[in-house]
Amino acid sequence: MGVVYHGNYAQFFELGRTEWLRKLGVTYKDMEISGIMLPVISLNCNFIKSAKYDDLLTIETILVKKPLVKIEFDYKITNQNNELICTGNSVLAFINTNTQKPTKCPDYLLERLGF
Image (cartoon, rainbow, N blue to C red):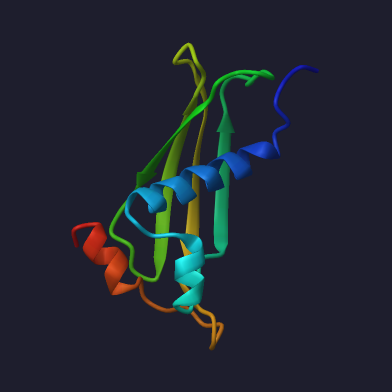
């Protein structure tokens, strides 16, 4: 069909989150080593226009509010013509890898976010 498969958008959002964290000096790998997992507990995508193969896509990742036990992001994906392709939202939970139970956002992340 010449368009990006809809299932790829969840991966685009993940790339946006990963790079958003990396810009703060935090990686998923480092979080997991420190005993924190961040599974997605909610995901929403609103398709506005089809992305086509070879489009250059930009993923804007926005923190919705101060993270507590959950962290929430909004997303906007645009193409090379600055046309809005889709918007989305995801919620992730901070989970302690040892207990497998929810835990609060790590202090080092809150500090890097200015909270």
